[in-house]
Amino acid sequence: MSTHAQPRPPSGDWLGTPYLRFEREGVFAVCTVDRPEARNALTPAMYFGLRYAINRVDRDPAVAGLLLTGTGDTFVPGGDLGKGGVDDWLDFEATLGMDVTPFDTLRRSAKPVVCAVNGLCQGGGLMIAMCSDLAVVSDRASFRVPELLRGIADTYYAQVLARVVGAVRARDLLLTGRTLSAQEAWDWGLVSRVVPHHELRSAATEALAQICRTAPAARREIKASLDGYLGHFARIAMESSLAGPEALEGFHAFKQRRSPEWVPAELRRDGRL
Image 1: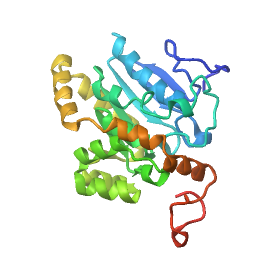
Image 2: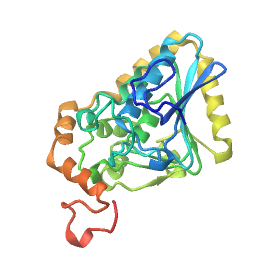
Image 3: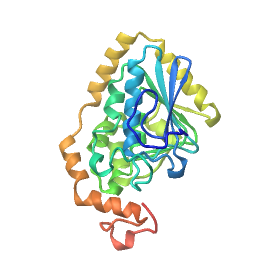
Image 4: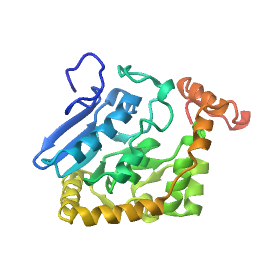
């Protein structure tokens, strides 16, 4: 954990938050999400810090690629709806939209980015894995898209997920919010490599090395073509949803560990959905 006590924006290898570690290992950079007390939930500053890390690697001629991973049994569970933390140089309410997220930055990065998915991966974490060049996944990992349970019409997910796994399976994940195991995710084509947990770091590093051996300019042309296939999302519709009453109720329900008011009484559960 960083010793920086006062929150401040990114600078150099400091990513603007004590919950992200940026380390250099030979020709690679490793960015680790390290916030175990909140199961690695991302604050706005953490989202922005991930974007900054990708851009920093792109600008640094001494770094060939970036590895993203998490700590403990969690990769990234999405945004921090509980609003805990010290990253107050970025305010949650003012930055709830897509302006601080790293998704588009991942899609257009010049240097390769590989995710080592070490555990729970959902919400923004799964989008990070899908938008990276490659996700190498522990056999202990699990995946979920809980946005509709939070009252958010995530049109980015509706666009990208349908392209990755097809409309039928995307509808299943989006509309139910159910959890997929690593094996199911591999069967569906949501991820391409599943490895034993103890081999994850070495397998992800080797995958990054494999990509780095390809020709950079030609590789970027291929990335551009694949990015065109993923397409664009309905940004205005999503921003309207984020500012709407269902997202607000979903936010309050999450904080209060209860089912949202839109859930029929007989279907409500104790705790969060």
